[in-house]
Image (cartoon, rainbow, N blue to C red):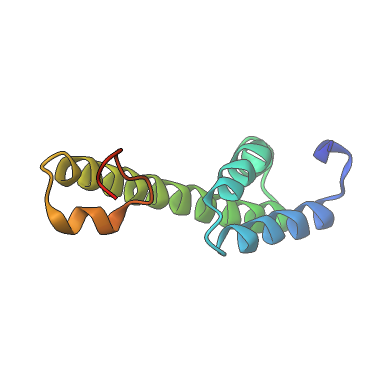
Amino acid sequence: MDISKLTDVKKVDLCKKYFLIGACFLPLIWVVNSFWFFSDAFCKPVNNHRRQIRKYVIGSIIGSIFWIIVLCSWEIFFQYYRSQGLVWTDFLTFVFPTGRV
């Protein structure tokens, strides 16, 4: 999809849709939204439509960073306690080592 051919109104609408879809626990959509609309939001002259795009791009960047921190924290927590062999950590996984089930 070539977004450079879209009008500013359609760009705002598409950016808003991607932001709302990303808010439904799909942080990868926020990353795509940030990359697609970054140049429109920050590199071109400012007008009313680009202010709205900037708002959604900043929200997408913040949301993406938040989810990256949450997922990395969860993975570190999971790997740390799973390697200790504690009983309650078996409830955190779907993959059990051979001979454990």
